[in-house]
Length: 351
Ligand code: NAD
Ligand code: ZN
Figure 1 (cartoon, rainbow, N blue to C red):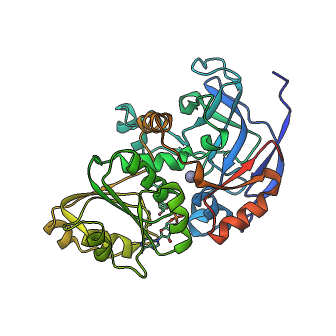
Figure 2 (cartoon, helix red, strand yellow):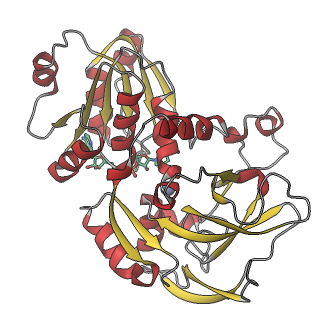
């Protein structure tokens, strides 16, 4: 193990406006219960684009000067004095929600429901950097066979796995609204988990066409020019979907989902609406639907299930469409802004 450098390169929000700034900063200092990770690959998330563009949400939630980024993989470069679970050289990624130990939920082991949670790359220094510090508790060791770039997209895959596995999918007909990266990966998970029919909707043809490369058994529907009822009849469905996964945050998508659910069906809702919208609650009551809000992923059961699914054949490698040296970060953000990409990877050995 070579000696650690004193400084590192990183991407920050140096100024409260659109952009990302390449800076040189001291290496993070680790506490006794923390691990220093040498970042190898990062992926760019929708949340990073909010921070990059500095929209209202970012301006209200993210401190200026922050190193952002939270989807990553790397190797352990150093460990604090009390760390026992990992060692220098291990291939790792990490859970991005850093929880407290005071709330009722945290004390009960429901870590993902802790209201004192802080987010790596949102409130805490993130992964768009050569090195990052992380509590040992959050570190996830990765199988040697798992490619580093897949390790860098496990954060959004975790959202997809947690949402998709919220309800029993075996033999069920599943409607997923929103073919963003998470909706697309949820379709792949639903196929792998034994759903009978999977239908994925969007209003963007490029996304739906791309989605077919990741979830080939799924019926893609552009709801702007195809009627969902027609598609359902075409694929032999007469009643409605058993399970709905809302992954767009769009009002028309949720209302369309309610309309097309089977009586007594279950809806898991991950999409975050940009603002409050009206919902026909009478239909939810009349159809006896269950609607469950989904936040993040389950610590650490979702990680276990996700790694097991990958081990047993789940393939999301086609989700990655572009790779850039980290020094070309501007080209990567520009590409993300066009919306015509799957996951975009930065290589931090080339900074
Ligand atoms: P994304 O914004 O890339 O994808 C959303 C997709 O929905 C887009 O492709 C868009 O064209 C599509 N869409 C818009 N209107 C539609 C309609 N009427 N019908 C069907 N599709 C429609 O998002 P993503 O990164 O894949 O994330 C999915 C959602 O999950 C977002 O709302 C995001 O904010 C949210 N999210 C929530 C959590 C959580 O913890 N709850 C975590 C991560 C992301
Ligand atoms: Zn993310």
